[in-house]
Length: 63
Image 1 (cartoon, rainbow, N blue to C red):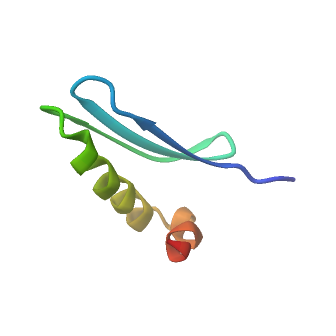
Image 2: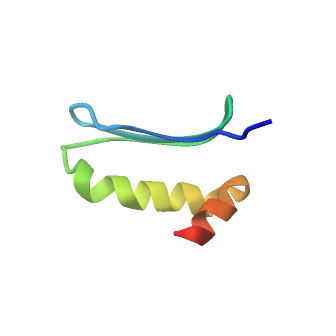
Image 3: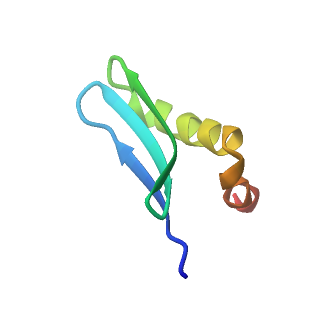
C-alpha cells in the first residue's frame, strides 16, 4: 500500500493554519488568528508540528 503524506496550508485573511495527514489520518494541526504576517508565521508552525509529532520524524530528519 502506498503511503501519502500531506502538508496542508491555509493563509486566508488573518488566519494561518497548518495540518499534516498520513493517508486519511490527521496527524497534527495548528491554527493562529491574528494580524496578517503569515509569511513570518507559517514556517515556524510547520517546524513545530514536525518536532512534536513523532510519526513525522522521518520527514523532519530529511529537512
